[in-house]
Image 1 (tube, rainbow, N blue to C red):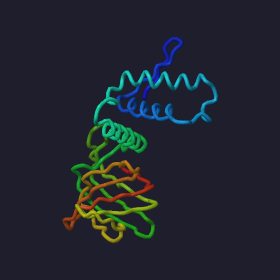
Image 2 (tube, rainbow, N blue to C red):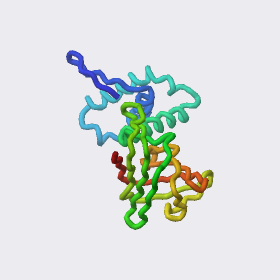
Image 3 (cartoon, rainbow, N blue to C red):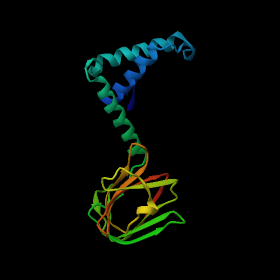
Image 4 (cartoon, one colour):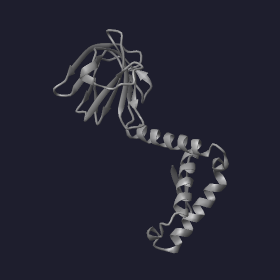
Amino acid sequence: MESIQKDAKILIELTKEEALVLHDWLFRFNESEKVDLILDQAEQLILWDMEACLEREVSETFQDNYEALLKVARDSLVNTTVQMKHKLSYSFDDVSVSKFCYDLKRKVIQVYFDDFFDLQIEDYMGIPCIWTIQNWKEAKCRIEVDTKFYRIEERMGIFDSILYMHYNENDQFEMFVSTVDGRYITFYFEGAELSLES
């Protein structure tokens, strides 16, 4: 969502997903009995006008699969917001782990690499680094395609490489790793602190 001030007007630009989600909310609000939230008739008029404007632009409201399209738009906005809130500036794709330390008592994982990829300049740095995950509130893991979750201390292995890492739609830091004993483990951390020292 962007806003632009032009002359005496403020223009608000919405993505297609933002417009669809906002239109759906305005429609539900305007149809509801929330009269106690409206303090002045001008507020209701603005909400009706916004709904009418969006209805002209959002063709999805008249499609048979509207609910599915709305869910996709909502999920997209949540995922984008999570990614922006927790934008990672580095990755370890195609980089082998050179050393691995796990301190169960202090809730600290340290992973050593000889290189890392800087996502801001989009280039490998060619310098050793230590990546730390610590102070998580909760952590769990899943082995390969198993649907059962385990405490990480029950299934922890020595990392060989990190295949992907990102923040998921539940605002958890998620990473998929291969271990030196040939297992693939997906880890989920809530409230973890991440740091990179080079």
